[in-house]
Image 1 (cartoon, helix red, strand yellow):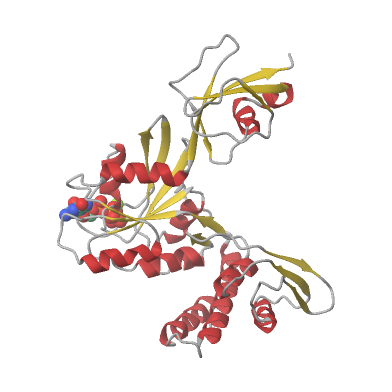
Image 2 (cartoon, protein in one colour):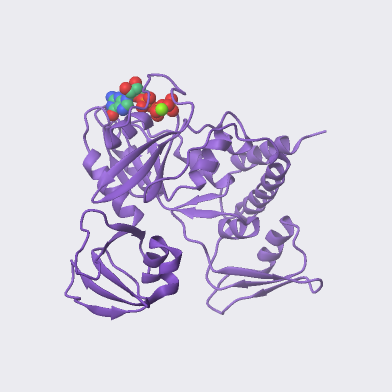
Length: 362
Ligand SMILES: Nc1nc2c(ncn2[C@@H]2O[C@H](COP(=O)(O)OP(=O)(O)OP(=O)(O)O)[C@@H](O)[C@H]2O)c(=O)[nH]1
Ligand SMILES: [Mg+2]
């Protein structure tokens, strides 16, 4: 009897064997859907055993995961940007567990996780790959680390995707209402150019036979697979190309741009390390908010660090639960714009550098 894992490998092989062109596009899409469904099945079979004390609790204002093949220099990078001492070795799998470090940058504390080199079929449970992937899922940003040889980025993205982590792509506006009868009905505005039969075929691969599916923007096969698969998280990622002190092929390095913004560094000569810190900080879209008390004193040393889009409500929540209940209004000034002593409510969206005084009912 073939196991699910074997079936997955067979489909994977078929996908790799099939030349991608207009004629095979649709066939490959369905194979991918089938594979995603089998992977989900395999996962649900496996959710028994424990992880074995592998994970590290999240800390700081945001978490960044270093992901890449063995020996590309992930530990060296962690050490260079945080001053941590993660073991460095000139062989694969030097790092066997998660090593956390903290990058202190512009008043924020960013947790950086050095992970064991991700390996082929990590999503299927080989090595400690699965545990690595579960740590990645919890991160706010991924650093896709490679070296002067730029090897295997395709595979890494594929492994991440298999475990439900999609990088540098946005969630598409698709939703579904299950039904008991009626088959698959597709609802979409005229601007959406997708074949209904295609949606039906895809849905069928995921054993969905009766449902109303709403598609509000143009989507491709991958978007549909992610939607039907469910439990997918979308994370931003930056491509870090290490060992730039070594000879490298400029064209190859440039080609990495298709995976995301690239930063060239050398952990050993410290080249590009400051750029990398800045890129990490920018990509996390953090905002710093300073609290001012009623007497007018502002704590400029320790800002509250929030994500872009955060509101006054998030500030209250961060201070205490009681604060949210006692909230009357907030007074806002800015260190960066002309806003001064402006009265705002809970839904006000904050910007970096805002100074907030919370006025409570009591
Ligand atoms: N020339 C050069 N060598 C580097 C650089 N960064 C790291 N190395 C070397 O590359 C090798 C691997 O570095 P590590 O930091 O252990 O790599 P890793 O990605 O953490 O490896 P694993 O833990 O096995 O996954 C070591 O011999 C490092 O000295 C760099 O910028 N330039
Ligand atoms: Mg390492």
